[in-house]
Image 1 (tube, helix red, strand yellow):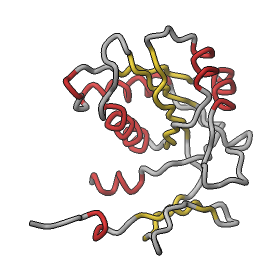
Image 2 (cartoon, rainbow, N blue to C red; image 1 turned 120 degrees about the vertical axis):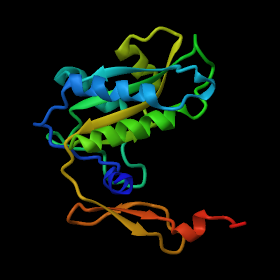
Image 3 (cartoon, helix red, strand yellow; image 1 turned 90 degrees about the vertical axis):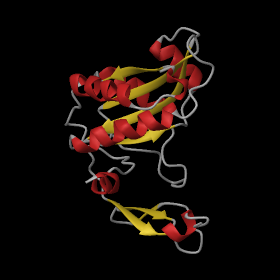
Image 4 (cartoon, rainbow, N blue to C red; image 1 turned 45 degrees about the vertical axis):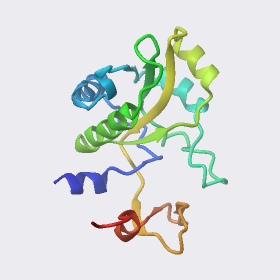
Length: 190
């Protein structure tokens, strides 16, 4: 069951903009993060839940999409996320989040997948503008933005060929993602 969910939990970049992600559902997903392991058990991550149409319109241009697809500026109107979870590090609690950010982001993506939604974890964003938009105090630092919505694209996972890590899109808009074989992940068996 877990492997099936992991196979479905892809990075989606195109969504049905007519299908909102309910704020209550997002709050439930953030609540699930309470059960994630936390380095030193500090639990220093917080979230801004963005679901309003105008707020989503303001967040969208602050994000960079699909670095390997240089000719693609990101989702067009009608295919943009209908929600965002902006992950914040509370520096009053800790100077870093160790690995908590990744654990919680994976939890959020899996929760979204289970509910029939999808997401894209974004690290490339205009930090100063994002902080200004969200009116964040100095002690809250933006770590990631999780774009969310009802996926409208097909994502295919494929075996990596000749070490090529770049994802690509075919003319029919199928997104292809190469993955290393297990034999390359296992360094040694003792």
